[in-house]
Image (cartoon, rainbow, N blue to C red; front, side, top):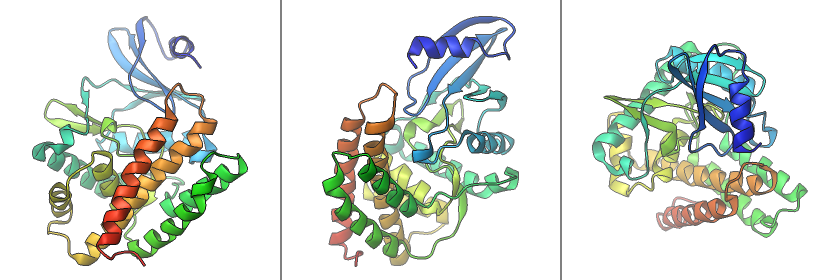
Length: 297
């Protein structure tokens, strides 16, 4: 689907009464996002089908979008149909990596994550999926081998590392998480922040969201300690720090292998090969640091 096709599809939805403008929004590497003005109000249309290889099922995204709106975390859902989700447009700015290097912004984002983990399960109902990163990594490796990926020579080593990381994470507390905390999925509007994009939401360890937030923003160690202290109410001890570091590595490996798969399957106009290389470098750096601390066996 080209940007023009996406605009046409968004304008053709039956929920409108008087569309006066429609234009693509930046971002979106698994769907097309279109800002539509209808009867003087602005909305965001998310266009995308199921992507089974990534565990993206739109019925589940819709259910969590409703729950997140009810919890006050996300804009309300105004319309949905196969391949399309319409939510309110929030005048806001998407965060960047640099934004999360500001202590105040990082603490506000951490509070948002804590609210998500505490409140989202109270509003979700019906079937909800799990998001266990180590199962996802094994599934990605299977798909990459089946499709003859250029990354096949790396896979055995990456899976061995994933097993070591899973052991290092150890037992986990389960929360209903977002699982895709790229800075751009956090919006700043006036005095508060919003979360968007629930494609990967599901039951997981809270450390995956926290590690993803840190790794996607390339936070320095002191900022990570401050984030964990804010979330848990105390500085992390050695056991929590080991589990967190291992989960952060796993989140980086998942982002890397997600991109490896997307190189072969996605129809979105995006440089997945460059994204793979960027995230692989981050993963290897984090893994080296974890090994240097003696946390992998």
